[in-house]
Length: 416
Image (cartoon, rainbow, N blue to C red; front, top):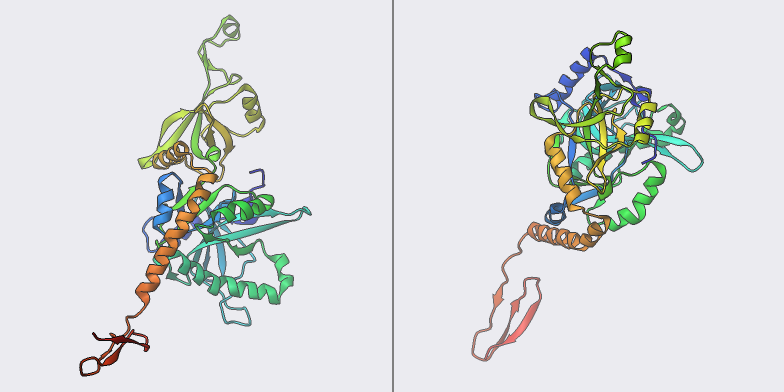
């Protein structure tokens, strides 16, 4: 990690609750769903069984950025909102996405919803560039693409949105200085290109905006809002984490003689002492239940207090150390809920399975062979059967003739 995460409040203007709820209803209608919850897909943690899954189905892989996920939404007139994981809406000014085949670049998309993440690229000369990296397209100009395959969804986005967008800035490069962020498609590879991801792509992106693992997305399945079993999130085993809701329990002290002399006669909490850090996970009906405790050293406690932020009831991301203790990694102010127990169980499975970079690289040849086999079978199925071979035989015993081999070439044979 170690790279700055974009501040959404510096990028857009947050919609007031009443207006945000109106937008949620409009997006739900656009997606033909009743729920107004966050409209994005969520991955599952990678475990050993997914090495077999990558051989069974076609998957694409891309690097996982430690950025902020969100869904930009465009509407009429041309207004763009960024939807974060808290399901808050922020108006982002100075964005324009022209329609294809419009040399004036005056027309624009409406009723469009894409999925991606914001990253802040930092270069060697110290300059920075805020980017929105798109990895899926759900709705385009009011037309749902969610039932189409991933490669088709991305093709629609690149041809209809990204291509005219890039053409506009190529013709008017001076306008780049006015945009809040640049929009790009996220680079993806076939799932068997794992070694190239580790050897070439990840080292490059680590330098500019950090890296948080890999994301494998199934090519053939539709876009699914909520937890999608066909989007696989791999992290190095040491970096598999869970987002908990943390609640502090401070020791309760009985008043001593000095307290009583000061008029304190009731038990009171000792806020100077280190508390117990209770960790809660989400269950059904939005109920948080206690799961474990976070281990904190005295020096870590002093560092947490020095942050001077409210620590009780905050979302904290934790990793498990080699002694099985949950340890502090960072606070997740971009999230309003802890992980659901179903997600927690998958992360625990991932931690236990301990799938490493080397395991993925070793599996790549088998993944590639299975992909190529499916590809060959699909191509064979698409071929139309030719006419049956014609048989020509000369009359009479001992005569010679020919049999067509199906491609117009005859082979001779001798009848005995």
